[in-house]
Length: 118
Image: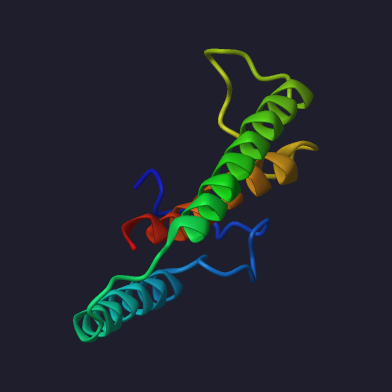
């Protein structure tokens, strides 16, 4: 009952990964990629050299994490957040778009982190 009556979030309306269908498409694409990759690796005698790919991947994750951390701190400061006892937001506060964007980037970054299993 608590979450069942909440209206759809208008801040992230129209962005990808906003409903179950998008999430399932991403997961199916990931499983297809892993399956096809396994078949390709069976055909090769020597595995792919992924050193530079992994280096770039780790740098991207580092930069993304640094951005999310700093932006979360900035948005918390702008929104007057305290360590404990913050009221539940309704989505129309002046800082709501900024914090929602950071949370959304975090959510999307979890999809990108699927690459860790390659």
